[in-house]
Each structure stands twice: as C-alpha cells, then as structure tokens.
Amino acid sequence: MEVKIQSCPSSHFLSEFTTENYSVIIWKGTGVFSVDGINYSYSGYNILFISPYQKLKLSSDSEENITVLLFHGDYYCIEYHKDEVACNGLLFNNIYVNPGIKLSKENYEYILELFNHIKREEKENHQFSQSIIKTYIQLILAICSKQKSGIENNSIANEKLPNKNAVEFQKLLEGNFKKEKELSFYSDKLNITNNTLSKLVKKEFGKTPSQLMNERIILEAKKLLHLTYRSIKEIASELGFDDEFYFSRYFKKSIGCSPRQYREKVGISVVAKMSM
Figure (tube, rainbow, N blue to C red):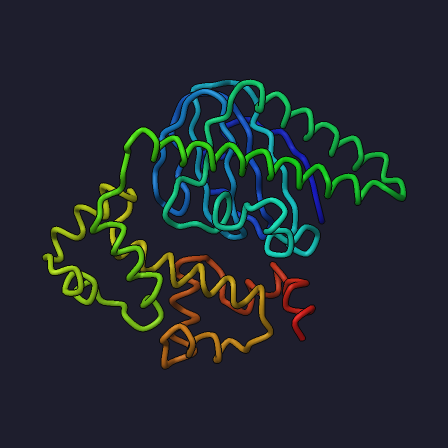
C-alpha cells in the first residue's frame, strides 16, 4: 500500500492505532486524542499528523466518520519535500508542539474535497494518477503548514510568550540529548531544582522533561534508521548507548517494534539513497 484514503467511525480509534505509514486524519467534533500517551483536547474542525509508529487514541462526541489519508514514506518522502511544504518539524516530527491543528471550516471542506480527488485518482489509476496524487498530498501539507505557522505567529503577536527556562531547556536538550540523559544535568545548567524544571516544562510543553528526553532520542533514532544506511550498532553508539541490544530494547519499549523491524517496515528514504 503506497497511498490510501479510508473513512471509519470514531470508535475505530478508541483502541490504539499505529501504522508504518504517515497519517493525516481529519474530522469534526469535540473530545480528546492522545499521541504516544500525551492527551490533547480538541473541538470544531480538526486535522492531525501522525508519523510512522506513533500511537494514537481518539474519543469523539460526534457520530460522523473520521477520514484518514495514509501514505508510505517511500511513496511521498517528507524529508525530500521539506523545502516545498515546510511540514517536517512543523506538522510531523516535532515533539514540542501539538501534532494537530484546528482548521477553519473553509479549509476543512477544501481538504476533504482534496481527499475525494485522491480517492478518485486511486480508482482511475491512469498513467498520470501517481503524479496527481503526490501533488494533492503536497497541497494538503502546504495548506496546513501555512495555517499552523499562522497560529504560532498569532501566539507571539498576542504575547503568549513561552517560559524562558522552558525555552532554554529545549535548546539544551537539542544540543545534548545524545550524551546527557539525566535531569540533573539540565537543572544544574539552568540553576534551578529538578522539581522546578519538571513543573515549568510540563506547563509549557504538556510533557515532563523525562518524556521529552525519551521522545527526542526516539525521534533521532527513527530519522537515522529511515534517512541513513548506518548499522543499528552505529546508530546506538551515536545516540549514547554503549550496548546495541540495550538500545534495541529501549527502542522497542517506546515504539513497539525493534529498530531492525522499523527499518524493514518504514524503509530507507530516497534521501539516503541520493547521498550515497
């Protein structure tokens, strides 16, 4: 399966949903969804962006179907198209922000229309269908990147400024997550207690420092497995694990499959192949 549109009732997502594909999920209603165990409330018109092997649960008060676009990384490479749609790190693969967006009614209806166009091209399957479908995917991601970027800019304009220590923690984590895996390293650098750091990070990002540290390691592991030909042992070493087998257990506990299985299912990106 390279690309697929499917509609299903909200009850389909009450149990854990995960896939080796990238998923774009659109629906309307009010409720709560969780991604990798982190809860987010939603209302109105919504769209959600899930990377391979992220774990989703969703509850909704609406009886309407939820529509899902699934596409494999080998079919439409997020990293390869990042300059065109600016979605990598904005819609997908960002541990610091809500992976969903509240859409305007106009954009909700337009994206549903694009989903229907993709479904029609799937059925017709003529010589230009794949190129057309990829263009539709690019358009959907560009529209949502534009809207999410606008939301973030409005937050700054409305003076919803982030906590300074939380921002510094994020910078420290980005620069040190491969080597420094103890909370005390970050609290010492910020000259605050572990407890204070935990509270302000939880308030800012909705996650504890430990959750963010774990997610950052796993995100980097996924990238290295998908975007490079490095061996599991080399990846483990780069991420600060002396033992390849401990790294594999650590990865499997978070993702649900081993690094080797992840690479087999998700594949190695065209980006890695182009850099050889």
